[in-house]
Length: 319
Image (cartoon, one colour):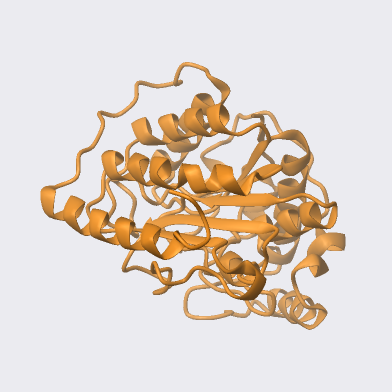
């Protein structure tokens, strides 16, 4: 898995904001990959009226909502983030991009996200006749992605995220609708969840993911579940990110990823490079953090929710 990096994403200069250009600047020194212009692909997911509205808002330095800031360079950064994610899907790469995408809906921005990078790349693959598993391990639910594919049986959306937390939904009873019933899987992680629960959540849903038989696995790789992140209360370490990368490579043949969250910039660099090293079967570039352990009450809450989620999925998938 090669990392697709370019400094153009710093043009989305949000100033003193959790999702700021330092998230890319901290990777300075990596080999640059010229990104693809993703604008021709935006309408695979987004409405033309929304695209035009966002372009205008960027030119006017407008604030989209309480959380989402744009500047004149934001539209360019966002469309190249889409393009790099498409490139990643073609070469089993990791698109190191911003702004992130998984909170963006077809007709609106949300939660720091402008265009839904992973959804656009996924829809392009679906249009080519492929079944896609989206594995979202960002600490927040990718509500935009979930909504976009909620009625699709060509895309399985699987999210492991802190609950409760922004955006507020993503509980076990959200399993899809119509043809997509059973193809949305939410695994709520209680605050305080460590590596043991994080990796157990992955292993517990893996049999269902295999039953889906995806042609491609698209990873929304967010690192705000890290124990020192600024926005959440999970306790995941670089040990678990390394191990998750290793297990994804072991379990699936065709995998690509794009960056979502992660707001402690020093820990973000360590976490991304550790995840990619695990996927590539390489030694971690720095010593891994000690594995974190969840408390008994956290385990009890997690197991109660996990078993309830699996019970709701029983009518669609074998145990």
